[in-house]
Length: 238
Image 1 (cartoon, rainbow, N blue to C red):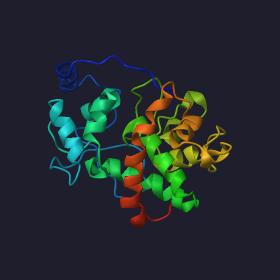
Image 2: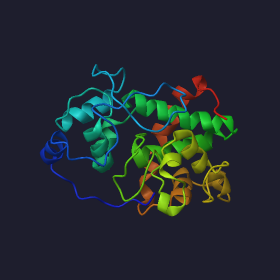
Image 3: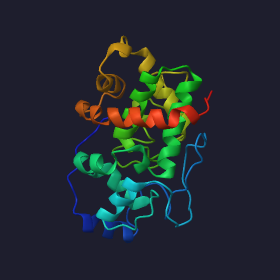
């Protein structure tokens, strides 16, 4: 939820730390298991084949830049780097939906499916996708990197968004963001007066209350392209 600037750590140090197995608070094993598109599993990650993932062009380039094996799958070190890398690098590597890895894409499809299931407008779905892209790059953080923030929306148990298990269940966290019936009483998008006429980045901020409110807007076109590409084939999620 609240975003704090983390000092940039030298690439070699981050990679060496991951290789030494010291990033114990991060999700996943050697590689996170891709979640089938439209799946509602949401929480947790396990091991997966080490073969390169289809698509994931930007994710592989990002991994290669930081000295990681460019599998296109989100492993522990990749998850950490995605959270702390500068926006300029992230925009360069994630310029198109094809740059997402399969598990990232699956979580994005879940956000869309929950929106469709509740008849949320495409504008509302774009706002949700923008938010998740900024907060997590659609990585479902089951252990916190920033305070106690978890899941794809970086919702915090200490701020009343639900339990860790609820927040890391992607359909449930999506419902919480949209303001649908969910474990939280915090206002979601549907509870924000006039959200439909707001600038999309401002609508993201109205829900998230981030310390860096201007960072959501950079993902608007990405989110629109993602919805245009994936939306037609996503089934509604009730």
